[in-house]
Length: 315
Image (tube, rainbow, N blue to C red; front, side):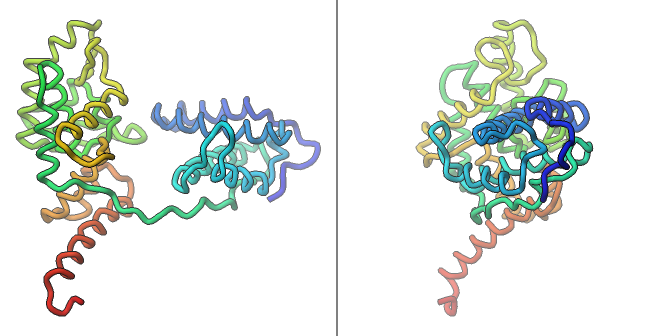
């Protein structure tokens, strides 16, 4: 790729970044978390260019974008080296940024289009066995109310609906229909989906809404959020992580159990129970079935272990 034609108007990096982020927010409806990540990646990219004396995005070449990718992998005094998956995410942000500028005719060329992200390690999602999930759920409900009732209900929703952490913390009371046992989740790109709730999740939510949420809400100024913190405000992502981490510790489970572990477990246990991949795709809110199919490989791996241990001709 070649930079923008000589003599073209200078493209200010900071102004271009601000316009791109506004486009993602207003016209594309990206989530707050996506915007935060893209802003962080964009600012790091502009700082990299500034360190190399580049103050005009029209002067960016494919080689510079490639150098930025290598810089992400090696790190610097202010940033540790990024894993391949994290570097790939940052490069996607940069490529999306340059594509926007090219499509909007701000630049004559797209210097990032041909820069390929690093290969990602072939990792399978980590799911908990059903008995470990039960221990985690029981541990979340220990302690004094109202926190214990909230924590149990929150973890039940993560596992019972396969919700992302942002979907669970973003729930409003109107999103719950406990009579019909469904919950409305808002996923990536503000896409909504209805997910059934099992009796355990419904019972935990009912106990929390009746016996605990009013107490927590009294400390705040009024919010439609389902899950509240001790100040009566919407539970934050950090608070949600703390709930799961504390429950895992009390249950004596391995390190590394996260809210997303429960989403992985939800999908894996459905497939193990006979659910088809298209149904699981809908429940998870995946745009593509390809994303969901990684879970089928988990169950195949488990079948292979059983086969190797049981079949007389397996070895």
